[in-house]
Amino acid sequence: MEISPFVLGLPKVELHVHIEGTLEPELKFELAQRNGIKLPFDTPEQVRASYKFDDLTSFLDAYYDGMSVLQTAEDFYALAMAYFRKVAPQNLRYAEIFFDPQAHTSRGVPFNTVITGLRRAQIEAEQQLGITSALIMCFLRDFQPEYAMATLLESLPYRRWILGVGLDSDENGNPPSKFASVFARAKAEGYLLTMHCDVDIPGSIEHIATVIKEIGVARIDHGTNIVEDPELVRLIAERGIGLTSCPISNTWVSDGSKVALIKQLAGEGVKVTVNSDDPAYFGGYIAENYQRVADEGDVSNEFLTQLARNAVDISWAPAVLKAQLRGEIDSYAEWA
Image 1: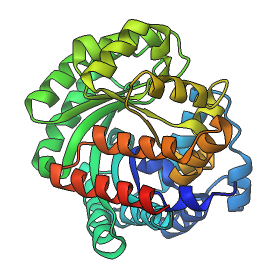
Image 2: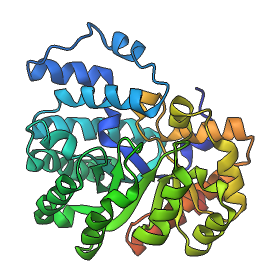
Image 3: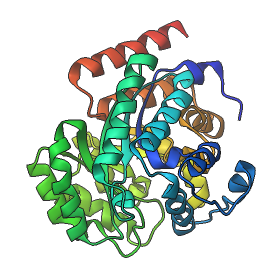
Image 4: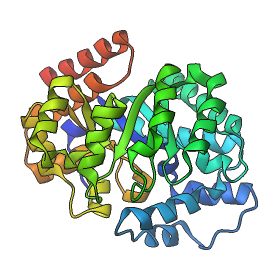
């Protein structure tokens, strides 16, 4: 995909990227060799060719299988730094990054190993690349709520490194209400709240209503099925609850990019944003996702700029950093 100079240079904020989903095949092979793990493929190209997802479940099978190479703090550091280096030329300025500790602790990798590796990369990325970031700890919804609660308690010694909590993995048969008590405890501990409400799944609109009205999230990941209920659309517009849409990944797990819904929701005053999700698997980092909106939506540069401003507005960055990011975006828009 050819990225326009405007899209490439636009200062960007990423609010929906899974760090485990940035594991490119080349790094996967490098880490496998380091850790003595035999992969069922001979080349990175064979790995990419195997990515033939047609729904969320088929994607998750490959996603969790790929994590087996992540064993040490050095591995998690390498994973995160590879992501930061990839997006630095795309002018990513700030990211709130999902990580899935249960995907690692469930296979014997300690929580401390995961978070210390990621934290080291965050510090170096800010120092060396000028990218500021924060971590959002996600619970896996296909595990028991008790495991999520135990993970929440295990995270508390690292509270200063974790900005909020989320909920991801297979939503089918795992509604948000299953984890209501975990999120209530997380909120009491000072964590900010978000949840995945994936596109085009059974019960999607009911799940969205639950996370807004009962659980009280600050924003919703994916969530474009909210158009099925105009009253909910009005509600999130009034409350400033944003949506973190991921156009390229949508094309892999649903019937299209949902760019038309992004335009519709933006026109109705919703703070909708553009993000990359699992870019190593879906073939597009944040600039490619902006370009997908530009190409398919036939939108103006001002519309793309507004998406960038939306991301700042619904981010959980400190007020001083938000002001800085808004200033960068406004100056760029005037100059460009």
